Amino acid sequence: MKKKLIRITTVPMSLAGLLKGQLRFMSQYFEVIGISSSGQGLLKEIETWEDIQSIPVEMTRKITPIKDLIAVYKLYKIFKKEQPFIVHTHTPKAGTLGMLAAKWAGVPHRLHTIAGLPLVETSGPKRLLLNIVEKITYKCATKIYPNSNGLKEIILEHKFTSKTKLKVLGNGSSNGIDTSYYDTLMVSDKNKKDLKEQLGIKPNDFVFLFVGRVVTDKGINELIDAFIHISKTCAHTKLLLVGPYETHMDPLKGKTMETIKTHKNIIAVGWQNDVRPYFAISNILVFPSYREGFPNVVLQAGAMKLPCIVTNINGCNEIVSEPDNGIIIPVKNTGALRSAMETMYRMPTEERKIMGETSRKKIVAKFEQQFVWNEILGEYTQL
Image (cartoon, rainbow, N blue to C red):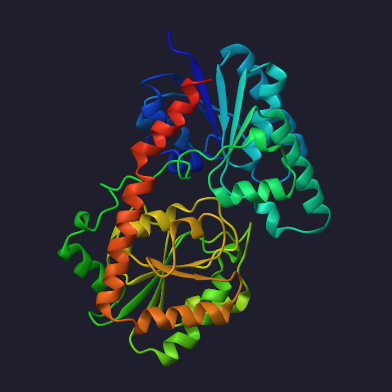
C-alpha cells in the first residue's frame, strides 16, 4: 500500500505551474493529494492533468488572520483524517498554514520548499511580523528546502532556522525544466514569422524580452527607464513584455504604466499559455528582478538558447555565469541595466549565438526536470 503524500500551494496556479508533471510522477510511488484554493475550478482541472486527488482549502496571499485560522483548522482536519506520511508545502502562506496544521496533527514528515522570500523587500512593522511568521513556519517543519544555494545563505544570515534543517536538492530549482519542451526546434519558422507580423516586429528588429509578472519587484520600472534610452541610441529595438500585471499586489509607477501603453516600441502581450514562441523571436532575455528563489523564466530562456541579462541575486546568479551565457548586473540599477542592454545589442551575432548554445548546454546538464524529480523522490524515500 502506498504511503500518502500531500502537496500544498496557496493558489492552484502555483500547483499547476511550479509542480507541473511532478505530481503525476510522484503518484507512481505515493498516494498523492494536492491541496490549494479552488481557483474557479482550476484545482479540479489539475486533478485530471496530474492524475491525483485534490482537496480545496481557501487561502489568501495577503495577511488575513480570520481566514488564515479557518484554513489552518480545515487543514488540520484533513491531516487527521488522511494521516499522510509527508506534507510538503510551497509558497509562503501555504507553508505557514500547512506546517502549523501538520505539526498540530502529528504528521511525521513536514517539508517546506522556499522559492523566494518576499519579506526581503519589506520593512517596518510588516517586516517584523513576516520575520516571526517565517520562523514559525521553519520551527514547525522537519526539513526546509531552499531552491537555491543563495537562498540558503539568506535564511542562515537571518537566523530563521538552524543549518541542520536546510538542504538544497540537486543543483537547485523546485521542478527543473523539460528541455525537450523548451527547445527552439519546437517553434517553426512559419510560427515565428507569423508572430512577428502579428506583433509588428520587423525582420531586422532587435528584441529584448521580459517574461514574468509585470510588477515593481521584477524590476520593470528600471527596465522601462533603461529601454527609453536604448530606443533612442540603438536602432530597430523592441521591448516585448510577456506576463500579467498585479495592480492589487505590486503596482508599477504611473509613469511606467503610461510609457508601456504609449511607447511605439514596447509591446505588452499579457499572460500567455505558451511562452516558447516569444523566446524564439527574441534576441535577449532581460530579467532585472529584485528577488527570486530559482527563476523558471531564466531556465526556460537558457533552454531556448537565449543569453540573459539578470540581476545579481540568488537563483539568477546560479544559472547565469558571466561572460559564458549572459551578463549579471546590480539590483535596482538602471544605468547598469542600460549598459548591459547596449552591450548585448552591439555584440557580434556569432558571440551571442555561442552564449545561447552555452546556456542550453548548462540547463540540460544541471537542471533537467527528470534529474530534479529523482532528487526529490530520493529525499522522500529515505525518510
